[in-house]
Image 1 (cartoon, one colour):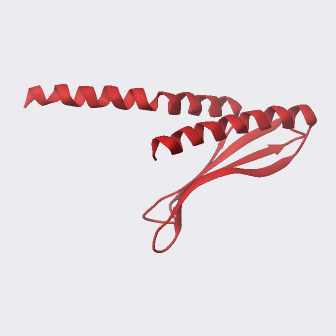
Image 2 (cartoon, rainbow, N blue to C red):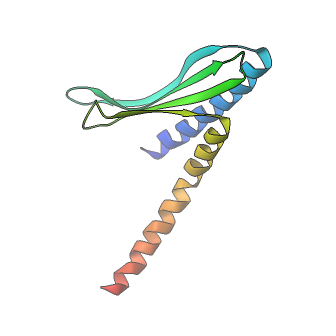
Image 3 (cartoon, rainbow, N blue to C red):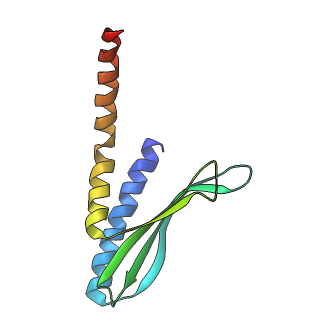
Length: 114
């Protein structure tokens, strides 16, 4: 995933949280696509898609994250993330650049131990 896609993913997850608040306030039940990050290979489409889901008059809201494996379209997973889990995922994604920098710095230091 590129940096731009990571930023877009965070934005879409935040949009899912906003929609959850609206659905709860207005007591709306809906399923609606938030966005997708997919690519086509020779045989199938793969990547990540996000869908907003609201049930129980807006009391239950989830962002459904569907991931399809690049090499095997039959390997897929659907994650139903409640608002708290979406917030945790956003926090992890926002820390990813800094975590990568630290890992690269540590990798450079590990070269001293050859």
